[in-house]
Length: 149
Ligand SMILES: [Zn+2]
Image (cartoon, rainbow, N blue to C red):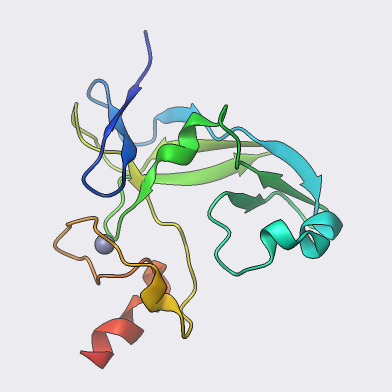
């Protein structure tokens, strides 16, 4: 079958992941690899001391998955205001799934899920989609930005 993705230069960020072939909606594309750490530890560790945990995913009440490692290829996936993937967990594993049919050579993206707060302007979005609000903010909070215009 071969890999469904390839690493390429991106217009959103330095690098991104791209579809190496046509991918059907619902397809499991890549595992989001990382190390399982306890929530207690992430709460104490200054490394995670901000609200913008790009690489940190919550597994359950006790554990998080820290994906901030070179071996985690999926961390190269960029944010988009109109994403074609989502990250979803089963047990202690997390995978990136297609949420629409993706054409070969399209960049893979998901919603980073950043909340809306006063420093949202520190995280500009260059996804280039028609729905782009200019900043990396999760879908449910984007109306706040639109209203400000
Ligand atoms: Zn955008």
